[in-house]
Structure formats: C-alpha cells, structure tokens
Amino acid sequence: MYSLVLPVYNEERSVEAIVTEYHAALSSLPYAFEIVAVDDCSSDTSAEILERLPVRLIRNDVNYGYGKSLKNGIAAARFDHIIITDSDNTYPA
Image (cartoon, rainbow, N blue to C red; front, side):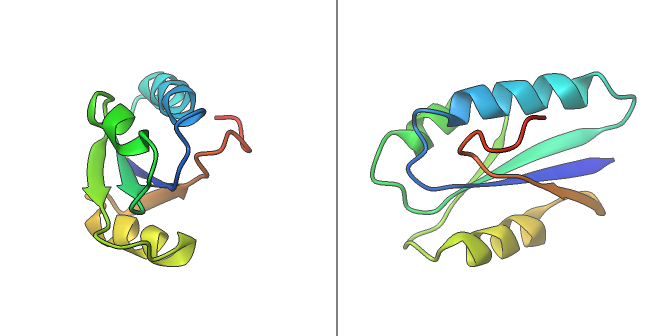
C-alpha cells in the first residue's frame, strides 16, 4: 500500500499529465494506493485541475514552500510507504 505525495505550486501546464501518468503506473501494480496532492496556494488553475483528478487534495492556506508541502502530504498519507515526486514533469512515473 502506497501513498504518492505530490506537492503542487503553479503547475497548471503539467499537473494533469503527471497525475494521469502516475495513476496509470500505480494502477498496474497489485497494491492499494492513493495520490495526495498538496496545492501550495497556487495562483494559477492548478487546484481547479486537481479537483477533477483522482487525488486527495490538500490545500495550504498560504504558500509554505516545497518542504512544508511535502511534510503536510506525508502527515496526511494513509499508507506507511511514501513515494514523493514533483509536479513539473521532471521525473517519469
């Protein structure tokens, strides 16, 4: 069982593709999983995009930065095994 933590800050151009790619990759495995997306007070449409995707969305009330967003996502994770990645399409699933 895995929790993928995805910090997001103004990534409207890439976040849907990232979530779709990771969801497909995780769905192919025989384990339960969740994707926890942490919107770090984005000023673009990232949060609105995330609302329609298969993620558990956490919204920071202010821009805390990458590290705090990771910590918030890890704290909210339901599973013990944590995967982290970026939402800017840096790392392929």
